[in-house]
Image 1 (tube, one colour):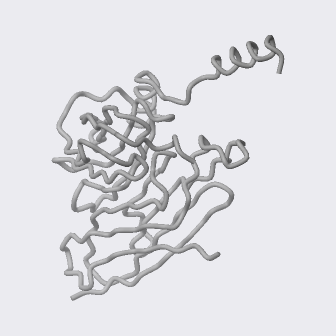
Image 2: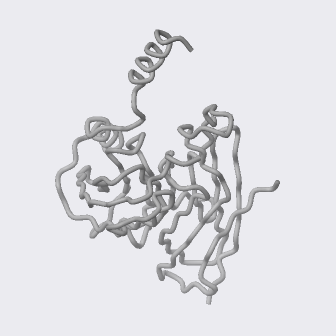
Length: 107
Length: 136
């Protein structure tokens, strides 16, 4: 199944004004501490790294650990002076990688 | 199972290390991230005091001055690290929100790292009635 991500941006951004970005990606964040129905440990499967770039420049990043809930959610604030493209990348175990891009719509 | 085998099995089970970090492990993790021991300071940690479900607890960390990084640590989850964020140079607000797991009632800590090398921490007590990690 294709990975789903939900990204919330303001409908209209003003140049130089802070705006909030919220990003969630569908992922089980399996901790490696739980056991399955057969009693065996479920292997660890985590999203380890999140990066947000504004026109290619890294503006926010996060290293995630097992204590982040399933479907990891992050909200943070950015500022932009001109319209551009915002991109989001999640990387994790078992070669997990998901990328989303959105246009920045200015008022 | 014979009685002796059962006794051995019980002993082996009792010797298994419990999956829980400690204050020392948390301090080591904080030092690894911040590069030094943080001082006590002011950070706003918004989290419910009484949490019913430890599987997804909304938490927000706010610094009262510009910082390069913020991180959350727990002393009594299986591992001390929760999330470690880094802000870009033009970050307008030094804060982030996420949802975390809590394995039990404990005092969680937020740590801030500033561009001039200072770092400080603040903690908040959280009571959890239904912990994460216990149910499949």
